[in-house]
Image (cartoon, rainbow, N blue to C red):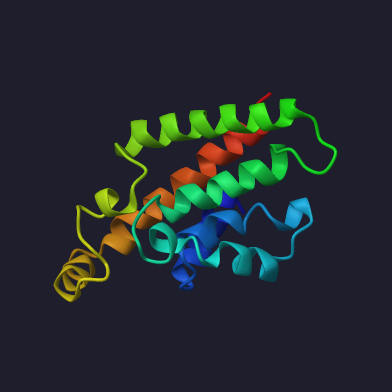
Length: 148
């Protein structure tokens, strides 16, 4: 199964966008599925439902850092590579969706506002929009991780 399909399955099982993206990368890099879900949980819905940076984006960036980032005794080249891939990720995600901001991706609607939350449900934005953000975040991250 493709990583993007697996991420969609997580999302459909009521894991948030960040969890759904990060968890498809973690186990192959030594982090258990359970720990991936826990680590990324707070980043969903633009970080704790604050609707800042999209959770699919933060999940993808954690995956890029996990694979490419500087660790203990790592050299600064790895940090710079990670920053470069992060900027490339932003560029591609923005090209596809116009922004990386959760609130803007949800048509300016505020999840914590009951009227807006109802509108989000009526428009089925989690199913119609967020699934696409999850899919694209995984595909973009995977491409960047595999590139030199």
